[in-house]
Image (cartoon, rainbow, N blue to C red; front, side):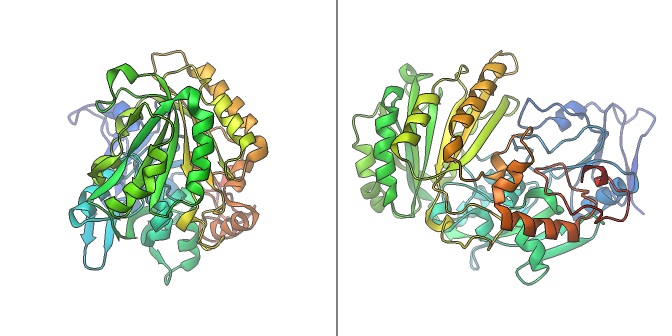
Length: 484
């Protein structure tokens, strides 16, 4: 039997603290030199101290770690990319099952499929798939984890043309609460596969994903257009009319905040309050130029950076604006089509933050997203027009946190009468439990509870936006039983 020992400090130090039978990866405990680095996640506001971090190198390690945790009644957190704003990838006192070294990607260009390990980032996927001129919907930041984004639904530039990430998911390998490794697809454990397409990390540890790919790029028409913040209301009114009949190929995200100090932005615009409409056209460049012409001609933009560019480069263009280790606090909701009273609320609150790094992002949905029937996957609220996220952002050395957290909450309250559900991946760590139900709607949520009760009756996997099993479903005093 193979075993691996967690280290105190350097490898030569004694004593050892834990041993996991069948584990071939690396175990990191509190006295290890790398412990603070290993427990850190993207959101620097998350500061949790697990008893043990089990850095896995394969599915067998995940099986061993889950069984170890169950035998010892340990809390379990699951880390893929560690990018979730709620910080649920790390826990206090328990074990982190860390997939961050499992980043392999294999592409079959003939069948247009990709197999992706559970710790991969979207930059890993794009790098491999774009070698063949292929892609699937994968967020807007390349250091986002594949697992977290996919299991919550998967919003990104390509969704209006090719659907959400979960709409392109064909199968998964997943380690269940009892340590069993299952394959879930439309033909194998279809109830579980349904739940994994939007239900988050509630049902197991996904060690690999199989995705459908589409012809995209490698050159696309993409880029942002910037207007002064004082034009926000008029830009939004025009934008609302513009996107109503926009082709599915056109993905857009509106950003409210200061112009980031990127090399492509002139220095005199750095930190100036602006409204930005970012775009990516998932089709021929010439068709994209025609589709975007009215938007580019509206008023006189401060800057127009739309042009042909590598898709893989565009996917990473925003990486430096959402840095690992900064502090983040979000509130979010889905919204209907833009109308005057909603536009007035957005324009009236969007620029009232204190930190120059705080911003608002609004994603245009519809298209292929809305043509999948409600309940076909566990992703809810498919008929909403927009997903908006209100993002307080500040560096650890700055004192904007309290003010901008208050700003996000006040802005969110002002949007109350327009709310149409929420994207579960945009929920923060202090949300009311009813907001998880809001992310799915009653019928989908109740069905998720049924699947949770079947596959994880003890709520072992509860360090997430939790879907609780029915009470008394479990028969053992397991790690999650007290949280049901």
